[in-house]
Image 1 (cartoon, helix red, strand yellow):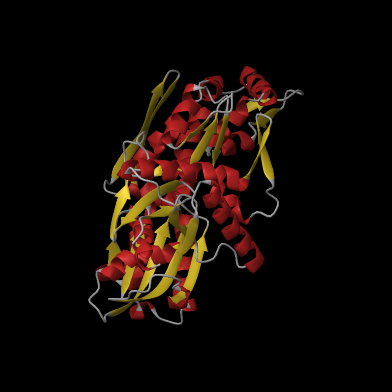
Image 2 (cartoon, helix red, strand yellow):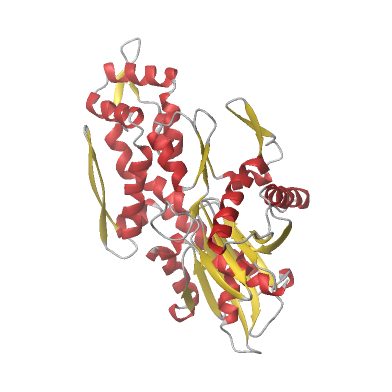
Length: 421
């Protein structure tokens, strides 16, 4: 059989697998990323329109003092009818042009690993991009167009939750049938699927008839990071502080400043002249000028990404430790904030409720009960959060829970799909 790539283009991270003669393996997608085999789905265009992808994009974004154009989460625009083009340094880019840059980077790195050209790819896609069939078709066509622009001649699709389940299916004895729930926790969304699997099944093509129900909620790893930022870190930068208005009255510092701080890639927007002048005036009459000075330093020195790295580290540690802390030291910013698992759970309580309700609804829509689900297969970074595991353990029982590689199970399943095209 021909060599075929399996490519998981994600909102936050992307990954690449190769099926070479029926043998599937994961390819190191980013030599600049020292952790894992994934590529951050991020683009950075510098001032002369040179483009970088993944960790290299982040490195240049920081080195160039955020003076270029950083683009992330482009996958979320696949369903947007209003997205036509975006202008970068005077050049228009269509959505599929931007996605193609990421896909082309993965293709080239895979071919470099194999030392040969690969013209076919199995791309992951949600079982439903949108309940509107027209929008769903638009999203798939855009993704297919991006793959062609990236240099792939033959493009096939597989549903992401199906791909996540295929590795588990391959471990079943021939003739064994299992009904499983797949929970896929990404950076921007959490998706749930109830699907029927069969051991020895050689059909990994369109498995839509085996999908009994689907569900999803716009809660992901980035959401949890933002909660930590809001509850524990934003107060260092003046949350709840006040300043004197033009008439001498005390006013609250505008909330939009702190809301912006909770998404690291938006922090450079606060460097715009009007925003910086507004913050300078606030500091001049603030009841906490030192906090506003720290805010200025965060903005001017472009520390946002590094601060969120510290937040991410603390969040990950809380998956295996009862307490962690966010540490960030760049004078005058000195943060050492302890967080316990219990405190973190309170921060994200509303989102855990959303996940819990979505899981219940997905099972209910399958026409089954939780006792009729044989196995629960959860994957993605947030699947390691104890409070999320607890949701599934309470509903299904601990013995039914199976956890696999957090970031590459989908792409491995896409590689398996290639064996039976």
